[in-house]
Length: 165
Ligand code: ZN
Image (cartoon, rainbow, N blue to C red; front, side, top):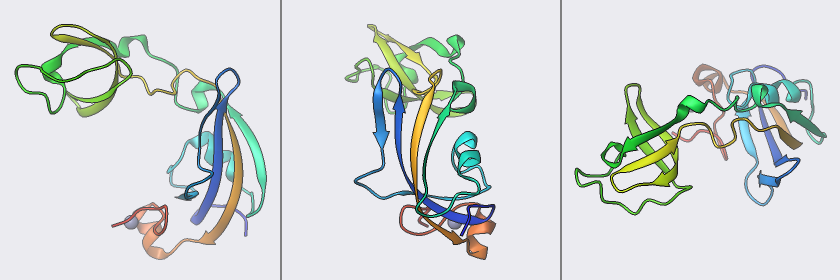
């Protein structure tokens, strides 16, 4: 069965970068499960999966614009520690560079990476950790099946590795 809109696909992936090597992979755990045609995964990846079948393996390289976007230098900011979700007025917490914290913004909470820890402030970077990077995916399609009417209505896949509710 071919991958097309409203079919549920499971696949294994290995995500790597030319300089950094393997960043992460699904081998050794459950494959990724998604409903094709509903923007559940990166658009560039979904495009590359279209028309494939179970058992097929392929590689695709996505430039930043087609993966997690370009880095936005305006997304780097200095914020008071008290803006971090879960931190009280005193701003006491064990912050370390590289740590991902959630902050309150005008548009709700968002995850940011701590780049520098000051006395009362933190330098944070709200870019996606993979923004600005060219990424290669080695994909192995495990299974392709028809989606249930409920999955199509919800816009995501149900079952092992999918949406549980
Ligand atoms: Zn659902």
